[in-house]
Image (cartoon, rainbow, N blue to C red; front, side, top):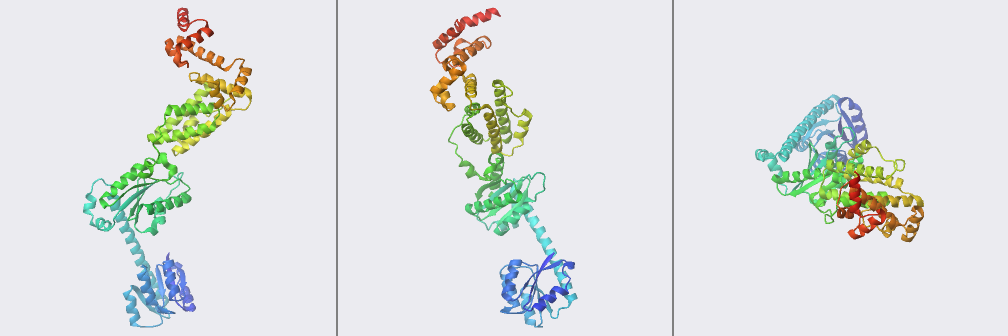
Length: 506
C-alpha cells in the first residue's frame, strides 16, 4: 500500500480528490492533507509519502517552491502537480525538480488513476532495484569481512571507493538469540533501531548480526550499543550479548576488528550478564587477586556444614572470579560445578542421616546445571541449593548445635582445631560452648577431639599401612612425641606396637 499526500488550500478540492479515486482498490491510501505551503512542507517531511498531489497556487508560496525545498531537504519520491492554471513555466519548473506530471483541474478521474498506477509501477521497480542493489552491496561486504584473503577487495572498486572516505571503522557482533523456538528476525530489528544513524552497516552472519560503524568515536558507539541492547532486551525479553572489536583506521583492517569481536563472542557464557564487552573492558577485570580452587571449595563445604550462608556466598563469588581468571569454557564450568555439587552431596550422605538432609537426585542436578545459560546462572543455582542444604543442617537448639560441632570435628580433625576457633565459627562464646559441649557429650572438647584423632590414627596404621610419622601428620598432631603420648593414653600401647599386634592377629 503506497501513501499519498494531498496538498491544496481548498477543502472541497481535497475532499473531491479523496472521493473520485478508489484509492485502496488500486493499492493506495491517503496518509494526510496539507492546507497551505508551510503545512504541506511539514507533512511531506514528517509523513514521507510515496506520492504528493500538490496545487501550484498555495497561500504563502508556489507549489513548485515547496517541491524545491522538499528536494533540497532530501525528499526523493514522486510529485504530481494539480492546478487550475495551464502555464508552461509552472510545468517547466516542476520538470526541473522531478515532477512526474501536470494535471489540470477539474481532474479527470481516469487520467489521474492511470498516472497513479504508472507511478506505482515505477516506485515498486525502484524499490526492487534498490533492494537488489543493497543485497549485492552487503554480499560483497560480507564476503570481504569474512574472507581471509584480500582478493575480493582488490577486484571490487566500488567497495574501495565507498569506504575510502572514512577515517575509522569498528565492528560489533550481536550473538544469535534463542527465543525458545520462536522465529526472530533479529537483523530487521537491529536495522530498524539503527536506521537513523546513517553510516552503519548491518549484516546477517552465521553467528548472529554484524554491525559496522564508520567514523564513530568510541564514546558514541558505546552510547548507541547500550541503547540498542536496552531496546532489544525489552522487545525480545532476552539477554542480548554484544561484543565490540578494536577501532581500525583502514578498510583493509576491518577484518582485524571483526576477528577481535568474534573471539570475545566465545566468552558469552562467562560475561552474559555484562551484556556488552570489548577487549578493554575484559582486561579491566581485576586479575591481581589469586584464588586457590581447593581452598575455596573446602571453605564452601565448611560454611554449609555450619550454616554460615553469608560467608558461603562470598566464597562462591571468589569461585566465580577464579573461573573468569582461568577462562574456562562452558563445558569445563558445568562439569566442574556438577562435581562440586555431587561431592558435597556424597560428603553429607556420609556424615548425616538421610532424613536430616534432603538433596536433589544426581540426574536432576546434572540436567539443571547443563540447562543454565551463563556462569552467573550456574553459581546462583549452587548458592540457592547449598543455602537450602545449610538451612536443613542448621538449627537453634543446643542439641543441634553440638551435633553440628561434633560433625565438624569429625570431618576437620586433621586441622589445628581449638574450642575458640569453633566458637568463632559457630558464633558462640567459647566458655559457654565448652560448658554446652561437656553437658551434652559428657566429655570436654579436647578429650573428645583426641579420641576422634586416635580412632582415625588406628585405622590409618592398620588399614592404610602408613608409617607412624605419616599418621601423626594426617590426624592433626604437629609433634610426634605428643602423638605417642596421646595414643598410649587412649589405646594402652604405642602406635608401632599397636600396628604389630594387629598385623600378628591377621
